[in-house]
Image (cartoon, rainbow, N blue to C red; front, side):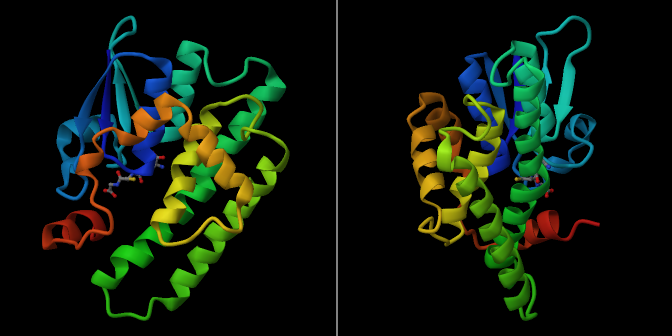
Length: 229
Ligand SMILES: N[C@@H](CCC(=O)N[C@@H](CS)C(=O)NCC(=O)O)C(=O)O
């Protein structure tokens, strides 16, 4: 059995999609990041960076294995079950390149787009036009990178893989943040291709009733989520 520490956000969806794809049994433990659950001592033992997702795998010999960071979790699960990453070195390195591209590029930039467009206006009176333009342009550039990548293939790196699960979860967020996909026709087709997979739909829907889109921040959430030191 795998415990999934989860809240319905792009970083969470990647892992719920992977677990659904694998068809393994898992137990979802909500981490309400707006209420500060990520600072509970029992969670920090698993995820010392106070971020979700994280997993605890009880289905191993000896002590359960804990994993934080979504890229590490995807790789751990892909290796454990021998699925969604190729065995040959050439195929494998392509998946690792794109997985790391999401972790260092698309994820953090989209996170900043969301922060400056949705939350920062509730946190400061400062002029936010520069950061909104800066992160918006960078997100647009990165979406162009995957659009070109998908021009002559159905999936990001060879067959459907953990790279698709990771990148897709942030690519669909682009529209939630108020941008459109008109400049990215190949990404649009790939998004739909992925939605044809029942595991993607199910993983994306996990606990979706808990998700608040463009929330008005409570004072508690402002403190817990945005005034960390
Ligand atoms: N690099 C991390 C990012 C995880 C992350 O930023 N998670 C956010 C939610 S999407 C979180 O837990 N935030 C809680 C906080 O900021 O305290 C990963 O890929 O797992």
